[in-house]
Length: 402
Image 1 (tube, rainbow, N blue to C red):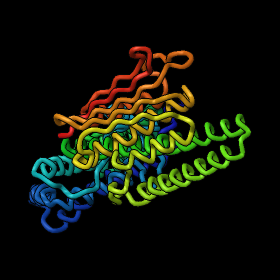
Image 2: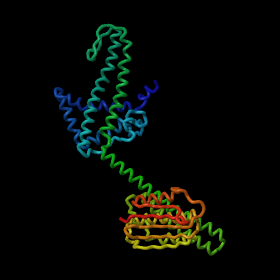
Image 3: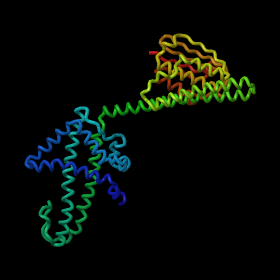
Image 4: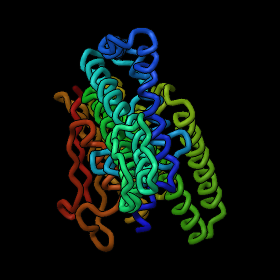
């Protein structure tokens, strides 16, 4: 019983009722002009639906009155409404002008459906209470109202038992018609397939951008913190003032570089249109190698091929892959000898980082660093292999240049 009465405690039930009443304003106005040709009002309404701006007007009205979007409440997605079953959680009512004939056609159908349902609801909203009044009158022996659509002359005491029926019918009509018009609005005023595809592409681009920024922060801050921790631990272990000075200098330089990268990434968040050309590329790989060497790692680097001809996206992602690989060496193996190979040939960029195995071998796919390397390679259409190889731990990445 409480569940049946719950719709009448929500404001959206009554705003939907009002929405259907508004639908009959136009035919009512036309009846004052020429009541003998009411079909003209229907035709004119259909022609109005072909105007692109009509979709915006109807979408705004439906969003406010049918979904309660202005207040952020009474949405059928949260109210157990049939709209939820019809995809209300996945589809919205758009408020942009019609962009094609398909959108205009759906607007025309929407206007006609709203008019038909509105006329029925308005008529019954007036006459069902009048019927209840007539039943009371005939139960008492009075005459029914001549304007009502049901005429039952005479006195019939048992009519008093039927008085609640028109009231209950009206209540069911208000709730049912409101839900029906909401489902139709979601279908006819919702986004077209092209608009849904565009929204999905936009959402995908946003998620990819967030993922890229997360990787940038992970690589930059993770590398800086790893270098700082290794340097600080080595300085404390050696107790050599000269080495401590060099370690502090390396920590300072790494921290400064990390702050610059952090400021750049935050700038991208604040200004999405900012170009990414300021991001480091493989041409700047020397500072990564020097940072690793200052942490006690012996780096044997071999670079072959013209790095300056590598396309920007590949060069930037290659820099981050190299940075993440060196960070993993410092984090998991410590100051061990590392062999770095960078080769540009045959339309491919080959990165290979090898270091002696130390401790337990990580399982396949473990660690966010290895995942980041694979994700970057996959986004560029390349491939990455990580794991033990000939007694070493190897990261081998191949990226196409074209």
